Length: 428
Picture 1 (spheres, one colour):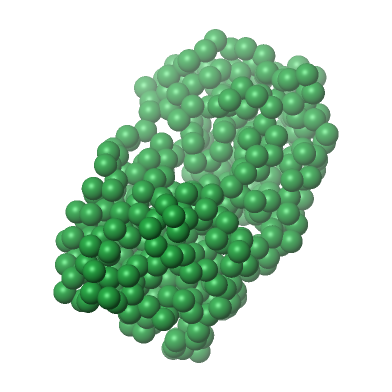
Picture 2 (picture 1 turned 120 degrees about the vertical axis):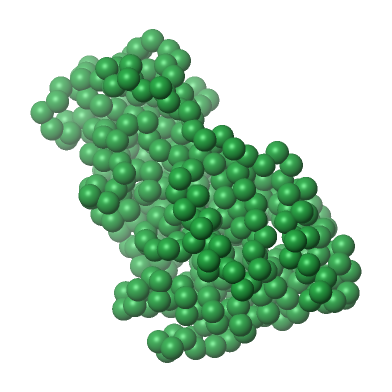
């Protein structure tokens, strides 16, 4: 089969960013006047999630230092639901991978999967909360605000999700996801969020919004009384700044790597257009990908291949790198078992692409629309097929970086990655 020729392009997104994140954390937290509530010697639990947030170690360290400056005793609590295999050790390991260790942070990390039930919602749902955090005098919620990969509402992923799913640990994540089958996402978010703020001594929040280049665009300290309203406003900014594929429609999207550090579903459904249907775009999606080929997993995902089931194709080396148990725990907890299903796989990437291009309709392979990206978080540069040339000429936000060239494979017939030019094995 003759494959389409590919062109390297650069996308231009809104590039606003915070240059000194530690200083911005100090400025923002100072605006909350936490010293009026936090007394010297009191303990403060600071949440730390499982996503690969830009500068998260620096942001967390600055929050720790601010609390220490008040004479209080901070400690960090992993807030990541069932991630890390649903174990305290696994969650500690995830944080260490981001540079969040006791030595680097200057305080303890208290990791446990044990929760306490602090309340019951009007719907009769028990409100679970991390036991270690429940013993603190105060809790500071730190999290990134962005669109959720499965739910839609005025609030999606952010401070509220950290309180519910993150600090609810495996027990809370499991019951809340089950409850969403019977109640609306916003009903659960509102009820559980209100309970946590009221019952768990939440002293405030630190919200992070990133730009399309995976850089810190905004850091905002949020008073606990304003969590709901501010998160609604920040979500609108996050949606506006979300990275996009360079073209709305594609016959085959090739993704070099997926992982939980990149997105809740490994690949961001807001980017690939499979938020409402695992294998087809709907009228509410912003992208339409006929077929998806996943080439590998990130090292940081530790074998968690959640989201692999949204792809139609993969390679054998990706399947061999999957931790089936960890993936199953995460997908069952999130009430999304299809996300763990295994796509059609072949030994080499050349075989995968040959098979995939036979399933995209009447278009001949050399004229098919193909996009190759590193992952769904880093879309500044990517490869697109020659079929997009006419549209490229009309787009001021896209810059052509190379002439059309044949797809680049290594000696093992595996495709070269977008970013490194080396074989995209698992852990690329």
